[in-house]
Image (tube, rainbow, N blue to C red; front, side):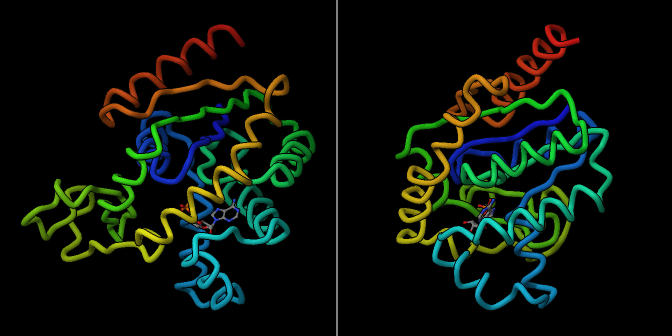
Length: 220
Ligand code: AMP
């Protein structure tokens, strides 16, 4: 199964991708995590990429497409993957389609998670990330907690620079302008499963798995 996880920042893509990856035993590819790691490793991507991400803007398509091609080949994604954060523009979606065709990949499904904008803003402004395992939590969940409930790392929580109020607004604008049209691109081309993400993590996950099961039954 190959899942393109689609949705605005803060809708829960990262959290759901991690759970799906472990339940379905397929790799989770997060382009945001790949970029953050590249910055940490001080590759040629570092300074300008960091500034762009901190401002909530998009990294140029050619760089992102290179990263995806490289990741597909390196991580052996032939048996499946969950793509989180890519494609974010129609140019990226077109290039991904070419790659899918080139590698003769089947069972590709778009899972689009939706939630009201005010809920998304609230979640992003209330978000803490573990710098070791990259798990995402809300500040409320972690009141008086110093050890990551997922990986056990101590004092590993941080607020992403792009989770500040001003940048959150920009990220949502960028999503509405550049990324939303990707769904129109997929209409009629690929199966798109819509999931209401305004529910608990567990419920949203259940709904995704149910829909994926139906998709598998209908497509095999
Ligand atoms: P994320 O962790 O998915 O929220 O991504 C964090 C940031 O990384 C985004 O705000 C962009 O600056 C950059 N980024 C991640 N994926 C992409 C992509 N597919 N295209 C362009 N920029 C991206």
